[in-house]
View 1 (cartoon, rainbow, N blue to C red):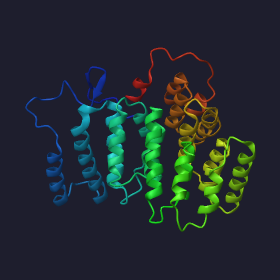
View 2: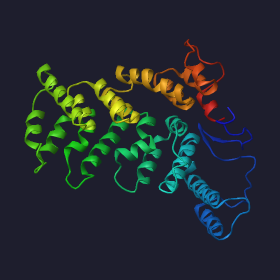
View 3: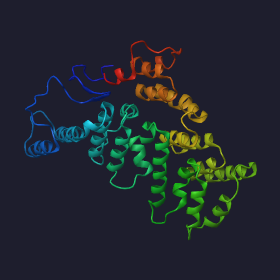
Length: 347
């Protein structure tokens, strides 16, 4: 546990209403200057010129990143809760180091913090601004946004933004690029409209005619399924997953995301958007894929997230306290007395 949780000798948190802030009520001196971005910039200017003993050049750069991130979060801390501030700190740190090192990556610990934040609207705005451009699926996967958003309506709206951005991301504006996203949203009509504008695409005529059909009928479901298998044979995996959705076979689309695309986040995202958080496909995915993966990797944070998504809050807490393998085999519906997810996340 020492490797996972920070030292308990941390400053006490200041509560205002139901929201905790990263602030120390006892230690704060009213005369102290607030730690602002200008202060951080001044410190970092000095660190660019002065070498700190016992620190390597790389470690000094990391220190500068941490100073900048701390000031950034301090600027926004009064508008978010503690878990949101923690996520923002690590995500900002990741964004600063992106392209310079792959050492810092967002983990399921950070995704859990965002998932349990009550100020997710601020976090959504924050991560979308950090891309400095249209949010594509690769950006969404990097932030884990479709793992931690809890408002399904907001999640679907954000997924549609990604769909639109995927369509406009290339000069050719091919509907192929956004098909999986629009069909997960069950917006076949929108996709058909995009194909109508896809002049010059050799697949336009055939796809337009196909999308005009009623895919509630078994005949057309079979046609879509055959197309999906043909696309798999051509190794057009994402497009194949889209046709599985057109055929109403969410489970097959999820399998393609897992086995061929190797993208578990995409599998979870399309399940949440297509069926909702209570859907049987998502529950099967969490039970059969996510929890075994958590056990295999020894990732208690991934296990906790999956249990919480499954409505097993008692197991979500146990996963953070006990060994992952052991917690996955605990049965029973009783809650741990006197222990909450907030208590564990604050450790």
